[in-house]
Structures are given as structure tokens and as C-alpha cells.
Amino acid sequence: MADKTLDALVIGAGVAGLYQLHMLREQGLDVRAYDAASDVGGTWYWNRYPGARFDSEAYIYQYLFDEDLYKGWSWSERFPGQPEIEQWMHYVADSLDLRRDIVLNTRIERAVFDEDTNRWTVTTDSGETIDTQFLVTCCGMLSAPMAELFPGQGDFAGQIFHTARWPREGAELAGKRVGVIGNGATGIQVIQTIADQVDQLKVFIRTPQYALPMKNPAYGPDDVAGYKSRFDELRQNLPHTFTGFEYDFTVAWADLTPAQRTVRLEEIYDNGSLKLWLASFAEIFSDEQVSEEVSEFVRAKMRARLKDPELCELLIPEDYGFGTHRVPLETGYLEIYHRDNVEPVAVKNNPIARIVENGLILTDGTLYELDVIVMATGFDAGTGALTRIDIRGRGGRSLKEDWGRDIRTTMGLMVRGYPNMLTTAVPLAPSAALCNMTTCLQQQTEWINEAIRHMRAHGKTVIEPTEAGEDAWVAHHDELADANLISKTSSWYVGSNVPGKPRRVLSYVGGVGAYRQATQEAAAAGYKGFALG
Image (cartoon, rainbow, N blue to C red; front, side):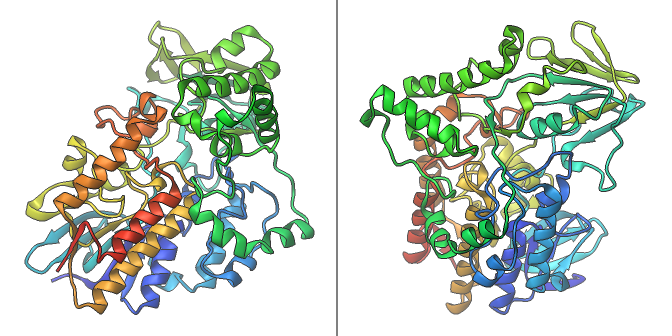
């Protein structure tokens, strides 16, 4: 006998979980959301490292289902920092009166599907069991930290912090010898923020990154009124662009002269956003010549700032194309390496061998003495949040084992063999990487909500992908992915940062608008590709 019975259980109280809870509750379900954190916010609860902030414009990283909710919050700048974002998440939870149906400080450890009852039995870390018809996972794309990576981490006498588990009370870094492992989007934010606070900063760099300068103006009353006046435009536009941002690819490379291309690149670069990546020329993802020309444009911008040939060699990518990795925005990041107290350390060909009591040692025996180690080492993206839960489907099959062999989903919304488990921010959907997250998470949670509404209206109790439906989606996904240069590059986008993880482009690369249309067409055709019973 379970301790509690629900119609639906939502795992996660972040951007997707809050909205999913709201919608399912509105249609009359007995639903609870569970989260391991001590408050709501998801990624914006956990990622409170120095310098954490948006790199989507704040006014598009918002819910668009309620005009009053949208306009009731005012942002202070174009790309706000984590404290302000977390406050916004609290505003959403409180405005919608969601807290009464959220269980915090509770980790979901196990979920088992009962084929006799067509329901899930979910177990928490406290031993509570919940019987639920629907299990809806809103665990986040980047929420399973790669934290235990090096031998000897337990021997370190100082402090080790993974950026996604930064202490709420903060960390004292002033006057310390600090090492940052990793220089992706998160690492860059940390490095540029703490460089002038610490005594010494060692940055351990495996893969250089193309980085774009962020322009982050403060917002006054006129700016706020301006973006709020665009609510209808944004609501109509964002779900249909290629990446869920307000800008899109509109000009073909071949239609412009070389001089016109340069003018366009300069104008977009000057925008100070991700626009160069997500709305310059779509051919950067498919045409190696175009990729190289745009990559060289960005390299030249970086060289002009770095000046030092040795720094240029270490910090500017040469072996992969711009945009095939996650593109970071930065504020004075490159100039950090001109400081006397900052030293970049190349570890691609001389990896970190182990962590010792007083620092870390590279493969060649070099010791770097440190007081604090910051691990900006990323995540087991897309799959890790669910494979770290013991999820058992039909016949006792294990999701961890299934995805350990082959990462498959149906539209990123369900996995065959796991009935009534509906998913957000998992592989084979744009929300796995190439999307303004709120745009994609809203779309997915709305689809899930309508699927459950449809089932209830038609007396159905079970939904599950068919074998043919899942095969068709995986084949479609792979056909697009294989033609995209992202698939030729090693990064977390293809799971290569996780030892033993099956290689597959995690994100659907056909575009947010096309994905939305495909999922809507499946629903309109009586949930084609899914079996309802």
C-alpha cells in the first residue's frame, strides 16, 4: 500500500515543472511536484556560482501563457544575474500559488511501472511511496553534474566546488589560490568574475571556446515598457523560430557578396548576444566552407583582443567550427589572461592525473598548489538526470540500461517501454540544447498537458510510443543530425564528455518551429506514433 495516491507526479520544480504543475492542476488532477532542492527554481536554484547569469535575453526567457504574469515582472538588465532570476522563479511560484503542491528537500530515487494496474510506484529518499497514474519528468537538460571525475578528490585539504552545487552561503575566495577546471560557458562566467578577487587563478583548459562579447545594458522604465509592449509579438513569434529566440536565420550565404557578408557579420556581432550563432547564416551548421569563414571571423575578433600569440594558440579554437559547440557569451573574459595573477594551463595533451592534498598533478608530474578547486566540468546532459533515478518500465526494463545501449526517445516526449512517463528536456527534442529553454519547455509541457486532457476526455488510461513511431522519429532525427556539423564535433552535444555514453546528437536540429509542428500534427492525428489504451 502506497503512502500517497496521485493522478500525476512531476519531478522537478524549475521552469518546466512549475508550469506543468500549474496546468495539470488547472485541469483538475491531483498532482504534486517533487524537488531535491530546498526551494523552487531548478537550474536557477542550483547554479549560484560567481557570475551566473542569463545568456538568453531576459524578456524572452519568460512564460508566455499569461500576459499579466509576464507583465507583472520587470527585469533590471538585458542579461540578469542568478539572484534576480531566482527571485523571478519565486514570483512565478507565488503568483500561481504553486507552493502548496510542491514537496521540497525530497529526491526521487526509484520509479517502477506496474503492468497490472498501469500505474507507477515512486519512492523518495525518505522511503515514502507514491502511487501515480502519470509520471512527468521535468528534471532539466543540464542538471546531473559531472562532479566525481578525478582520483584523489577526497584527499584535497582545501575546498572543491562544482559550479552546479555552489553553496547557498557563498564561498570565500579572496586571497586564495584558485584553480578552475573547465572553460565552457559556465567556466567563463566564473573566471571573468573571480579573477580580480583571488590571489592566484589557474585555469585548466582542455578545449578552447569561441566566445562572443556580451552587451548587457541596464533597463530603465522605458526599456521595460518597450519589451512588455511586445508581448503579443513575442508570443506569436518565439515558438516558430529556429531556436526559440526572437531572431532567426533569414538570409542565405550564397545570396550575398563577400562584402555584404562581412557587413552582416559585423552588424550581428555588434549586437552583443547569441545572434551570431543563432541567426547569422544557417549554413554554418551544414557547409564546411561557410563554417570556416564565419569561424575565422570570430577568431580574428579574439586575436585582436588577446594579442599574445601564445594566448591565441591556447584560447582560440582551430579544430572545430564556430557554433558546433555551445557558444558562450563573455564580459572581458579574454583580457583576464593579461592579468599577472592569472595563468592558463593547457591540459588537452597533458591531462589532470589526480588531485592531491595540496592541489592537483598533471600527467607529466607538474604540481599546481591550490586552496580552492572550482569544477566547471559540465553535466551528463539530457540523460543523466533520469539515469540517476532507478526507473523501471515494462518487464522491469531499466532506463539507465536502455540509454546505456542506445539513446532513443519519441519526440523527446516519451520513451517506448515506459508507459505514462512523459518527459521534457530529454534527447531528440530541441530542448536538449538548441533552444531558448523556456520556449521549448513551455511547448513540451503544453503538449503533455493536452495529451493527458485528451486521454481523460476519451476514457484512456495509458499512453506509450509504438515501436514504429519511435523508430520513425529516431531515423528522422538522425538523418538531420548526420547532415549537421555538430555531429562531427566531440562535445557534450553528442555525449562525448561522459565516458561510455552512446554517441548521438542529443538535440533535435530541425528547428523549434518544425519540431512544434511535428508534435502538433501527431496529436491532431490522434497521437500518431503513440498507442492509447
